[in-house]
Every structure is written in C-alpha cells, then in structure tokens.
Length: 365
Ligand code: F6R
Image (tube, rainbow, N blue to C red):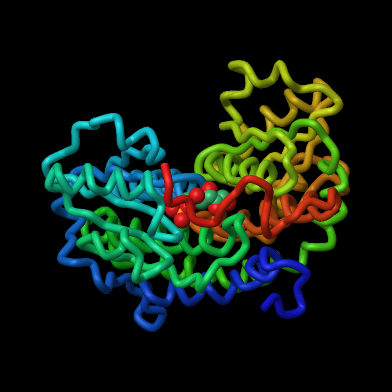
C-alpha cells in the first residue's frame, strides 16, 4: 500500500525519520546515552584487529561510509570489497579478523558466496541485514538487524539509511570497546545520533525545492556527483540512484580525484552535484567545485547555512540543509540525494518503482 504517495519509493523515503529512529533505538540507549549491542554473538571489538566487509551496490556504499567511521572512531582498519570481486579474489584474511556482510535482502548471491569463503577461513561472521530470517542472517554468528521494514521500491532508500544508522552505532560501540571513545564522547555521539530522526524529518520539507532543481538534471546525458570523506560514498550512491531511476549516466567521484581525469568531461551540458556540509574539508571540496564551475559545469550544491554563505552562489543552485552533528551527515544528506534522483525520474516519466532490467533481490550471480 502506497498510502498517499505516488510511488513506493516516495513512501519509503518519507518513512525514514521513523525507521532510522527504530534502528538507532535498537543499538542506543537514549536514557543513559550508551551504546549496547544485542545479539552480538560474543563479538568483542577489542579482540579484532581488522574488519573485512563485503556487499553489493547500495549496501556496499553504506559499508564504504562506515570504513571512515570504524577507522576514525575505533582505529580499526577496514578492507571493503564489492562481493562479486571478493568472492574470487582469495583475499588473505587476518586471524583475528571480523568478516562483515551488509545486505538488505540477506539473499544476494555474491555476498553469500563471500560469506562462505570467510566461513571456510574460520572468520567470525557478522551481518547487517534487513531480513531477519534470510540466508545471510542465519549463517552469521552475529546479526545486526536494520529495522527498515519491508522495502518494496527496487531502488534502495530506507534500507540504506538504516544500514548507515546500524553501522554508525557499531563503530561507536567498537570505539568504546577499544578504548578510543571515553564516556563523555560516547554520550555526545549517542546524543548526536539520536538527533537523526528529527533532522531527517526536517529535510523532507525540502522536497519542493529539490523537485524544482531536478528539472536541471532531467534529459541531461551525464551527471557528476562529488564529495569527500563520508560524502564520497554518498556521491557514488547518488549517481547509482540517478542511473537506475532515470537512466541518465552518472558517476560519483571523490572531489579530489577530479583533476586526475574526469574534469575533462566537464562542459556547460554537465550538471555537477556537490555534497559538502561545512566541515573541516569544506574548503577543499569548494575549490574542486570552483574548478568545474570555471569550465561551465552547472552546479547543484548540497550544503548547510554556513556553507551556503561561504560560497556566495545563486541560491537557486543550493539545497540548504540544516546544520547538524558531523556523524549524522551521510545519513541525512542521503535524503536530498534520493529525492533528487526520484524527481528527475518523475520528470522523465520512467518507472520509478520498477526500473527496467532490475530485480529487487539478486539471487543469481
Ligand atoms: C540499489 C540497490 C542495489 C542493492 C544491491 C544489494 O538501489 O538496491 O544496489 O543495494 O543489489 O542488495 P542487498 O542489500 O539485498 O544485498
């Protein structure tokens, strides 16, 4: 049932404040501002020296985002691979390593094959899954559910932000267990994460603005997405959403990588979506943005009030997000990215809930 919404995808976008709240509530105790891991299957991050992650598509981008969190908050090195590569790579794994699989369906064939490989290597297996009874969940020692509820739209939206919510909670837990996050910092991070549903709700009000901006992407040949740090995986996720929904060719790049090749593509027919909250690397991303603007690239900047003020661009080109704690930016900035792809597809009249050639669950190789 789509409720009042035109598509399942839009309904699922709008469910995010609620399901992000449910998911975070499973891992965080908001009363005593503590993180706790139910069903962790005896997992102790203090005894782990490495994580290797495996996933496909959107779930892979959630994992890639969490690499920044695990390494930054818990000083825990993360290797991450797309499952179709990992399964044939025969990667050497650390004896004290954790193998983590991220999958909405829990049935993705390549991800499952990666799990089998890690099982043979005697690894501790953990899964971030949305379907509790799935094959990947049942085969894992530790199960970390995302409480997104059933996702009907083929393009993943709420499952992605719930994966991020779960992985952020796990990274904080890892930081606490490994002694890199003290009690005060833990309290602050839990408080920051607890704000996510409220910000998600606030950002949904930007839909009209975003629908207007989507006109600029509709019927273009190519679109580039740029970001740094945790917004780099989000740039790739944004490009994936646009490709699958609108069939426009899109690429997500680390903003600093632009001058190593892709800037050659830029001309006045190339819209560029820049994801840049006003953080410690904002200036770096903005200077990359100015390089593309100087070559005629049409910019859509997603930033916050401080960022908007600092760039002094025409406000018609900016999606102004609320200022928010750093740890939740990839979760909350996912929403305008999703809405932008959705409205571009609606302008172009494509089948949003059932894009051509795609299946919801990829159970064959
Ligand atoms: C994109 C999308 C896919 C899935 C991928 C993995 O919107 O939905 O890229 O993320 O097929 O699926 P799961 O998470 O079920 O393993």
